[in-house]
Amino acid sequence: MSDAQTLPEHEEGTIRLLLVDVHAISRNSSRTLFDSLPGLSVVGEAGEHLEALRLAVVLQPDIVLISMRVQGSTGPETAREILEQVPHTRVVFLTLFDDPEYIHSAMASGAHAYVLKQEPAAEILKAITKVMAGEHYLSPGLKLAQ
Image (tube, rainbow, N blue to C red; front, side):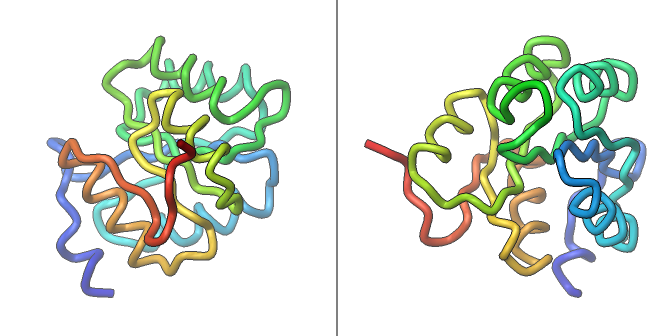
């Protein structure tokens, strides 16, 4: 995977990821994928709102990869609260939902990217690369609600 080799490295050499998704199987699959790629490290995972907030504060990840569904809250609300408590963290929504209202809600929460889970790994890496460079990113073909 050539995109993984061009991924910008964090000052410490690795981009630290926190996975937040209500579905354990999605978290496990994501962990397997991201831990196998050079320059990325999953430092924690949560399926529940309060645990996601706690881990974000304790672990200080570079990026929080979050789903629209989080037990005890919503993805956008959890993202907003994480960004309030850990403002240097960047938020990337990784989700199944391509509904413009969901996209708008996610981006309005302060998220830096919205990527569909059906995208290939190279597209997710592209989003991470852009977000680490200070840019915003939407999966190809997605549009924000008007």
